[in-house]
Amino acid sequence: MGELAKLLHCDNSNVTGIVDTLEDRTLAVRKPSETDRRIKVVELSGQGEQLLKRLRREVAKPPAWVKDLSERDQLALRDILQRAVAARTPGP
Image 1: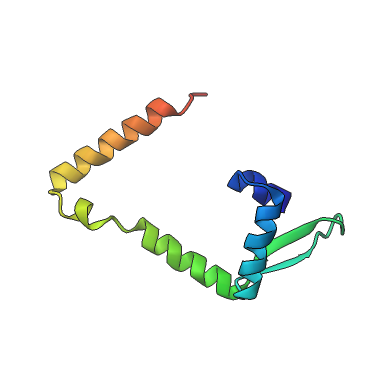
Image 2: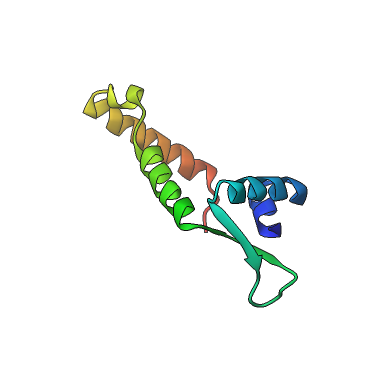
């Protein structure tokens, strides 16, 4: 739960509410850690895993405005975005 709070950049109490909602919708389960029973581990349920797969497929689809660009413009946009990300990312 603490790691989720760090990942989401929010307070632990916010994560509790999020996980409660996921459990209510049977998308996740909360259980004790195998190494420290004081720590709660959150795992996606089978239904949660299926939803995550569907979300990943949907997010991977380009938006209509990108699909409407010519192939040449799509490639140019890709190249520009890759350079922008590389310029932002610190090197090794």
